[in-house]
Figure 1 (cartoon, chains in turn purple, brown):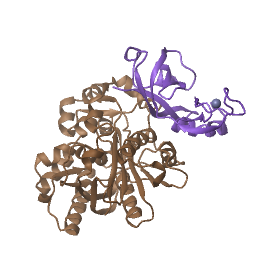
Figure 2 (spheres, chains in turn purple, brown):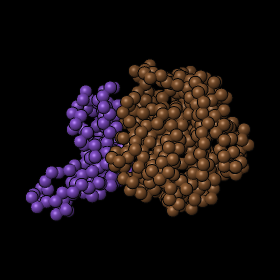
Figure 3 (cartoon, protein in one colour):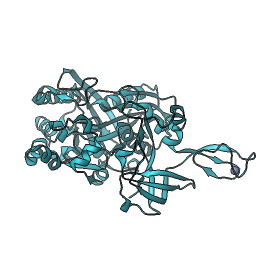
Figure 4 (cartoon, chains in turn yellow, blue):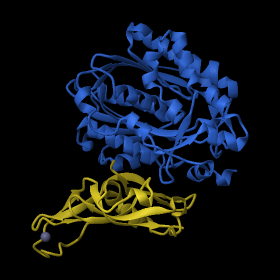
Length: 134
Length: 348
Ligand SMILES: [Zn+2]
């Protein structure tokens, strides 16, 4: 049931709860998730934490009918690549909508949802998904 | 001075109509709608729970308060449907709202009044200058046993309030608060039980009415006010009938009651109920108006508040979705979809 080791999931809490990535102060490139080294500047890079606004738009999407184990209750759901207004792209579910409601370019904002549960007795993993902005 | 500097509500998108539930159990929908004063109720998404709804309401409250969330010194979450039996909801919420590690966090439990209990504690901490800002949330995804009367009303929603003590920031001053409580077994759920039990008719007179009236009278006495001094009344709303009966006992006109009475359209949101009702009133209230709030929690108790709306409300409520916007944004479920949403299969 536990698809992800607890320490790994726990370390990703700032990223998943608050959309915290980082940014290179040298070349001004934004990263999400965080990078350990700026690929542009290498050793000259200066990485600092950055909290993203959670606003963005749909870059691409598809309807997922056959879902991985642990996501059965959510099926079918829309999985999308979201382009954050600060630049980075993230893959996430779009909640409370059907395929017909979503378009490329649709405006979205981050929402806080359950990502998955490790069975009935395990840990509940929470994090960002996106909702359509009306 | 102590008061509200930011507030927010959250109501999930899904609804189920009384007709849909009644048809499954061979009951007469009209009789139920009339008896409960509820048309439809709010149901959470499959990936929503009390923690996620608390975060959503909290984010709106923060946007309206216009403060750095790191300055929040306490985060208290009241619920009777905390996602874990052991492990706090409050730490999940404080982390998601980026309150920082120096936040006093705890979960509150007192049936449907856990959120207003949290609000009273926040008032104390802020008024005594122990901390600058405090966040109180009531959030529930209430469950009723399939076929039980509670299944028609048990709904989902959350209300979040940020309490502060600077006059320039306060959008509604909380002038006074009192409680009225006693050991009354009107509703309960034992440790490993899936669904709550209730005392049927016993939930009315010795429970809801005695405690809400007790708190109301204590608040009037303490503040030297009368019912006629208030512009709005918000009561805990387990159904549409109880608040109307209390209003009748206190001699309150319908126009002072109806703005804060939303349960006919979303059901009983438990810990969220009086806080969402108050948010609905704050969405429209004018500076200088006076609001009376009385929650009710089984077991049993009621917390009453006397609230004065200030000039700051006009600017501060511009951000975020209003209660009416949440109510209007809806999608109906069939009973089959509802069973999936509420994960009732294993319990049937
Ligand atoms: Zn760089």
